[in-house]
Length: 345
Image (tube, rainbow, N blue to C red; front, side, top):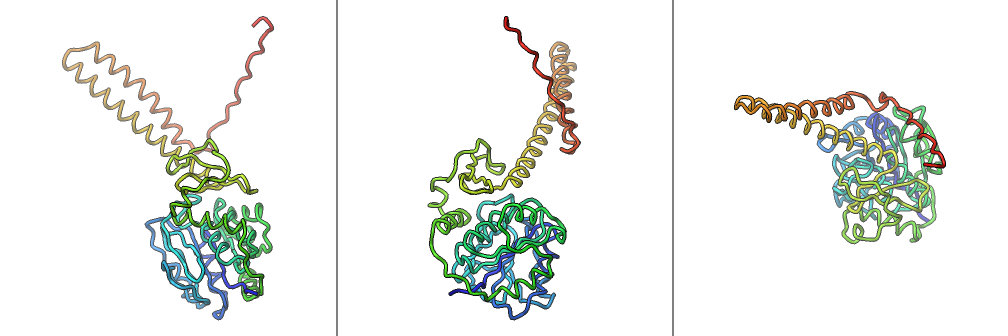
């Protein structure tokens, strides 16, 4: 029989404070290795290991690619790298973003479930959207333990609420309760891991995170969704065998429903700004050409360029007003019903 000795923790907004408080409350002799992903911007500087160590609990450090796993240590994913768990060691990879994030929580949870099965305890803490939900589902499928911070206790309730709504979560607790639970459940005897369809699927997903060619080129499960990847514009395949719909493109970018909507919103915003810039540049060009034509006495061409300037500025102003309006402030206009057609039409 094996023992629970791998703890994986995921957090986003409000996560630094939550992870530090949780890790600081764990006993120094905890017989488990703890892996942490908190969403950081790619070019940010993470001092989370220093913050955790100052709390006086477990030793904390940034994960190092290929380093062995030691119990009683907290390994934190550095910015712009996915943290993956393999048998006896860890990996850092700059693979495709998942849920618009790198590091993302799902790859860590999924890789831990693949490597250690029921020995894993997965913890989802404060954060927006729903990163961590699919990964926690993988941990449960492998026989691991699923723990979620109470939404009422979380600074941002989105991620905990999503996990609770979609995963068979065993424990929903405030931070102090999670620390006590981990101290009590680490070291529990669990069945040895068995290779099966779930483990093989997780291996394929981990391979995509590592950008293994055989995994990327393997036939995608599900069917083309008709939606484009917000990051690379490739076709997204929608998973067909999960209660939680997920989307992944050919090169590996992955999205849940909420993260796909967020990614589409970002792409739409960028497209609107690009269109606004193009229209303003066009208006400036046609206005300059109108002035030059007038200076040369070519009034007909000058009038044509002036007309184009006016039309372009009208269109640019429409997009400017959209950009100035928050999505929730855009009024919904009920479409007019089509007129009934008579039998003679």
